[in-house]
Image (cartoon, rainbow, N blue to C red; front, side, top):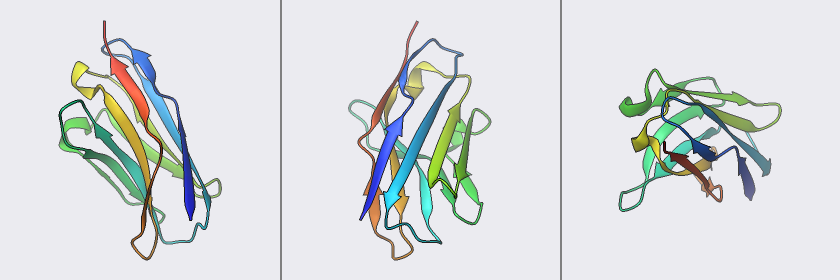
Length: 116
């Protein structure tokens, strides 16, 4: 079992920045994947950014150049630095952890609201 605890969401004006954190605990083994999805009201959950324990990263086209995913493997923590936020970035952001067997665990979600 893996537990994920997220933090860092909130209300921000367009053009502002937020940093999300997600700490994993429990049965953590490498290799693994961690990253972020988001779900806006009335929309499907979509991948925002992904990272592997080996260091590779991937981003949705809509956030490339604005969001940066990073991780501290020693702390089993993944971060999402979000800059130049737009109205359309408003969503609940979910952290995930994918084990080497392919099991998927989710965080509880954190609300990000971009509003003036």
